[in-house]
Image 1 (cartoon, one colour):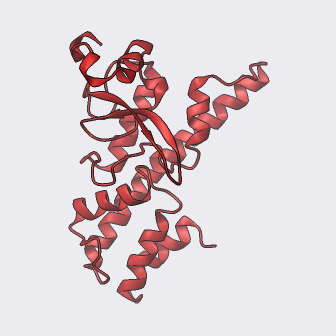
Image 2 (image 1 turned 60 degrees about the horizontal axis):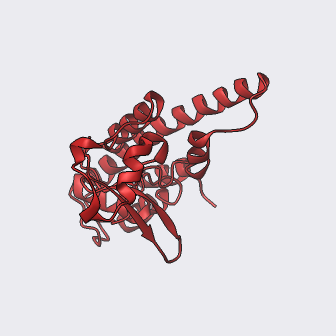
Image 3 (image 1 turned 120 degrees about the horizontal axis):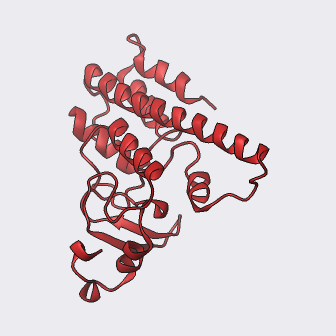
Length: 204
């Protein structure tokens, strides 16, 4: 099975068939897709003017989409390396039991769905790398009462069923599933309330 870098080389091959180059970019999303496969593809198409069903897109636009994906992947790989080093130090110091932050990290190892968007057509408009930087910075600075990506305070608890059952807080502004360690207990409790029973967002 081809890895991300091998697939990226196929996308960049100027002599390659355009349909194959597009297919290789889609396959890259099986290795790294911060919003999930469908939402990340929708994001890249929207930002770079690629028709989601266009089998022979403009190669320049295809390359720009790959560049954005690769920049975001570099941000995530650097974060994972730092995380692994921290855990090694903690284990050496006798801290074997991971906390809630580490539980979240294990579920997103590899960066797939790290900023999951439950609706594939609702996602942040900023570059992927910027979204990941904001998310990582927020997780490193402690829990807050707003979305770490768009600073929106509309946080709702959603539950999905289907192939991948999932439940958690979702930002109603940018659409990402907000990591629970990034939110205060009070904000999480408010998100779980039925909409008509929630206090004003400013009081979260």
